[in-house]
Image (cartoon, rainbow, N blue to C red; front, side):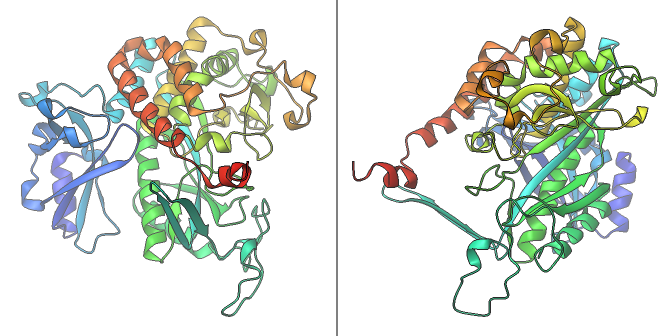
Length: 476
């Protein structure tokens, strides 16, 4: 849409307010609203001021005046506000005259746009497609506290097996055992209608959906697969997806979380990311003569992903909780190899011989990651692999077509693995980030601030005792 069309769209739908949404450095949407009369065509050039010092990873208080610049192509009516509200996704900029405002180097959406521009300038391809599969849990209740003398967390789901013996009311059974949520029909699956409502809301907002289903986790784990799109558009759609999932759950008295590992002893939530490159409307990853019908370009792209995987995971698996998911035995892709149709590998090649559907799937990320930073970093790693001709088989990255969870210890020693903690991943990013700086896509400044922010989270977790430590050590 053009700015003029956005104004007409808002008028036709009776909008009273305008909500400006933008993403902070960790990946959470922030917003503020103005009455509709405060939106005009100039707003799409001049933007709206906000205080950047109050946003995680942004400015200090002595240099805090920032602008949001709304993107007219992102306009939609917010389905969750009682007052009719037009929503616009924004980029962030420094104040300046007219169209000469300087894009903000720490704005994740700006970084994603620069990655797309870098791809076009490289001559390798002119478009990249991304298709994330973001899993989540829906709970009926969550309680947690972390104070000086109290450390606890408790979640509950009526679907969960631990409620089989619940007293105090009617108990109808049909509950899901751990790792058996993929995927029985109702009454065991109690969330069918909830997921369908999420799907229909997403489609009303212009986010196409391919499928929805219960996931492996027995206590309310779900997945909705949105259709692939270009890098920035997919990141926008994923932010809308998370917004719709959380608010639809809340509307029905439930709570949704994209936390990777909220439950011990069951599968965690990942975000497998499908990727492909195209040039002149031609897919670049397909070769009928190659392994799994992969082209050499695709193999180099995979080489880049796997070579830089430890550093990438500081961005793509960006929480301390992420590494409670990335352990063997829970369908977690901890092994740095590629393989055809093998879900135990970090890079899976979906089994298709259709040229336009040929893609690679990078499986270690999870949905707590900032999608703009994650997709940009994955693209930069892949392009580095193509530029440097990193052949994965020459670096011990496979292909491996066996169940990696059943290899002998001797065989596993020959295979690299993902970092075991966020601290390890942050150190890898500090040691290996030159590929992200190409084309000024990422800057040293944003990476330093990102690492500082994440290392503070590591320290927050590291300093606190957790309940299992009392079970292990209290009577020592």
